[in-house]
Image 1 (cartoon, helix red, strand yellow):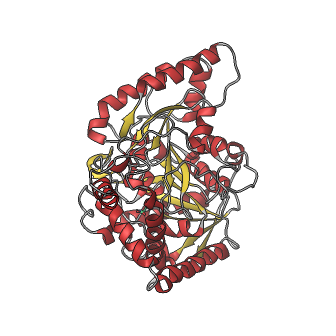
Image 2 (spheres, helix red, strand yellow):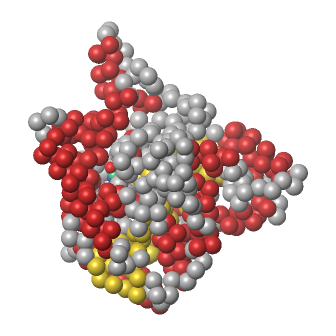
Image 3 (cartoon, helix red, strand yellow):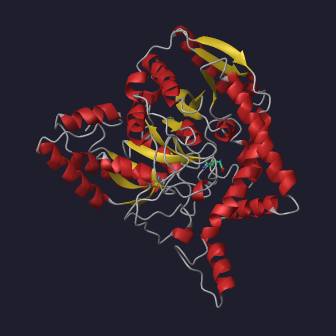
Length: 483
Ligand code: GLN
């Protein structure tokens, strides 16, 4: 079987019955068995259930039923997203034994369209992290160099695409968790606009920023997935009621005359020179496609990380209160109720989760609420308005996704501030609720570089169109690590 093929090709092979869905499952299961020990990309795999679901699709195809473009294609999901009858740990031991009775809405939509769930991806516990090292199941490794991190928090999902362990993946991005790992692993990943897809069933981290979105090999593959997952959901009141565009058709349009903003604050002195050069080269590629490059400025960019790391722990601390050993998951042994809570939370959460709960509780306390929480909300509004103002003059903005390539496991894990700062190019889009795509745009010493394409809220089609047109004239997205 040909390896590392995109969704359109999978769809064609399945449709022409050159490959059956069961064969596709077997192909990926074999690759997982061979590579997961080194990569630690999956926490849970259910090969039997995947084969069963695949054989149902194969039978339906044999009967000549009209099936969706993703029917029969195996995919995996970040473990912080609930999946019916498949263990969902959030990469924290407190949910080690938790198997949901329901599918999150995005997963339900994909399963209804015939997608085959193969397993659950490793991630930082509850999405807290930028390297996947905060997983209580060990860090997911980068397939380009297993001594390096896959990125976080959806590291297992990005690594699984780079290593061809499933055809596409669903992750979650609150402050960069899809874009960062996509950049480190050399795959395409889309942080959707807040409300473009349903958050129902995604374990809540920071409810005012959480988004559920896809990873795949190319912008075109992502457009195919978006067609199935975008849209209003009665189970999530924050989903937009806006119509869902025909992404697959929109991305084919040329970008002649499109205005691309380049915000100068994202090209500061500390930026790795090779990354700067790679992004400057992409700017030339976009010019060759007829786009107009316009220098722009987002002066409050440096406030995004501090603002994010006040607001997110506040929401985290409140959302995580439900995990107390009583309602779900593993219960710590203790004699009374109070100590049952503390024993469950003490052993069930990693250090970073506890740190967030403490920072959030502190910032929300009566004494500090105005100076931290309220102040951060005000800065969030300024950042959002500043970005919206720039989008009155340009169609999209391009920046590097991360200031450096994948770092070595252990490099930053002892220094939370260093880790937080790796989100420097990612937090702004999250605070503003806009969408942002990361696609590969180069390699330094065999490690991928990511390009971030930000578009206005609900402008996913625009971001994907730029990504797709870029991928029509370049081949970074077709590169993969040899395992
Ligand atoms: N690095 C970010 C954090 O730790 C990423 C979170 C996310 O997007 N889930 O908060």
